Image (cartoon, rainbow, N blue to C red):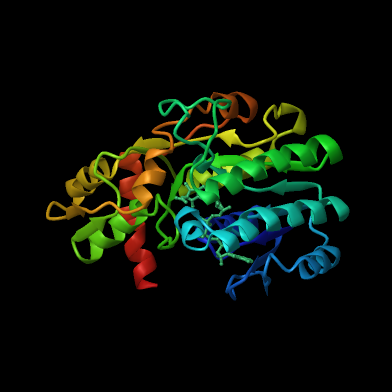
Length: 309
Ligand code: NAD
Ligand code: AKB
């Protein structure tokens, strides 16, 4: 199958592109940055609507994976650009996919759609969503848009509300949950880490292999199985910075964390501690395979292989 990925150079794209190639797809990987992948690549600003449409017409993908985004912290630094990339570009991508008869679109949402009036434990699929951050506002609007395009134009858009994604290959920048990757790199390199969240801030998380498996499983599901056309709640585990520090210390006993919260603390406190992903489990068989000890083991084993390559 021919597929196109936007934002392919980011944390999720770097794991998704190899998985799509492994599945046997012909992949066009695009990003605003230049990319090196063992497949076709293209430097493409997703806000350049004409260019994106021309590429769709030429490549004729059956599926589009639209990952280009500004994450939560970066969106607070550059709100206008954040809105343009996270919402306006998403509108343009959906509209172009409809016009060019793309069969299926994957676009990830986030736990950032939730807010202070959301129940924070086992957050239900449907409940108050009053995000305080610009990223969450754009993701919430994008979820409504995805459902609108499905109902009005039958464009088959599928989405997941990802929690913090943790993976070894990439030092993420611009998110609120990034500490969960940074802590591993710091533990291996310096044995010290200054965390920008308070130690007891528990958040839902998912290991990158589970996140990619979820994307592929959702995209392979029969459309009639899917009862959620906004974005499915999904999670792997929950942990706080302190719990992660303690887990890492089991392998690296002299590792130490300091805690100095910044503006990201307010965003994290407005997000769930855990989410109820019953509908994802029921509709398309979601189940996570990594818990916190398995995630730690995988990260500590994999990061040195990326650092030496
Ligand atoms: P990332 O920040 O690592 O990557 C985003 C990519 O988008 C980058 O490579 C960047 O160069 C690219 N990009 C930015 N502006 C662009 C533009 N104008 N044109 C083209 N490309 C542009 O993000 P990620 O973690 O890979 O996230 C991918 C998607 O998953 C995003 O929609 C994000 O909101 C969502 N998501 C991620 C997480 C997470 O923890 N990583 C959690 C929830 C949702
Ligand atoms: C972020 O922290 O901005 C992302 C997310 C949870 O969407 N990781």
